[in-house]
Length: 389
Ligand SMILES: [Zn+2]
Image (cartoon, rainbow, N blue to C red; front, side):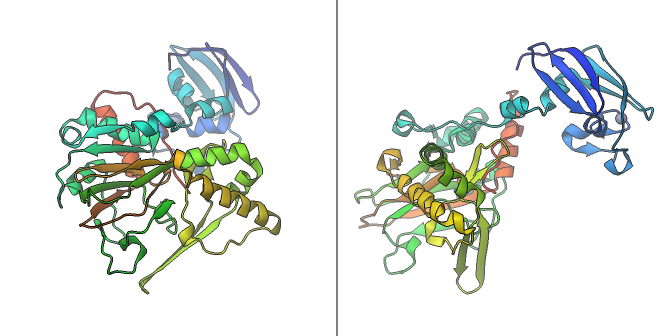
């Protein structure tokens, strides 16, 4: 954003309206400004370090004067305090609706060109070169996914790589998970039947954030592919086709449950589609294998089922699916709050071994910011995509 100056200041009863050099206006409430005073006594609220406390402030605090001076707004308070706000700071923190929309993170959608050549990097390069590593993570931020080629296909390789993205998260399924095809076992994940595109573990209060998969062994002769799909594309398509059904999915909770091995019983109720306060899609939870009975207002039941069925049908649409035959040494990094993954039916005549781990999305976002800072690059987006509730 190019530099904006404050051209006009208009004091009102409960705050101040600023007119900017690009013609925009932003209103700031008095209590908001007083609470966010950045002086040496009050602290630095923009980095979450405050000495002043709301409990000590008068909710009716009023401005006695506000003037522009040296590219900042100088505010004198009726209580006697004085605040100075840099115009950049005010612009960056303006909370009028236009500013909030401008700041909301806009993920990039998938199209056929994207599906034909998804972002791909060399594993060794990404491991050794911070700029390549950051680019790979930015692809996950923007498109929800990226692929890395030529990783050494063996145990112990993925862990140090994943740990650079953020602390590896452990769950009741372990810290490092392995999926080996073994037809003697009856569990779904161990068999070679098709798995419809889904997001992982929606029965958790916070599902896995960023998933990092490595293909260690595969039956390269056998049939079958891994599938990836943009959940946001599906959700937007549904919003266009059936706005009422979309709204019903977004405002009602879907219970998910996994009663696992008699010693774990995970239950969570969250919407299939999560929206932010501006109506942007920020996350999806899609996995009808683990859906428990919905408990929603009667008038929503029929549209709920209509929308859910359409959502699942769209997520099975071969034209929207990125089909990929993972080879030994292939790594996939994707955002489990956006990307659905699965596989077509596999014909296995040899071994198949996938290994994966997970990093919490807050840690992933933190790494994006810090790496950009360290490389002297702009952070580009702040805040980042929040993910499914
Ligand atoms: Zn202060």
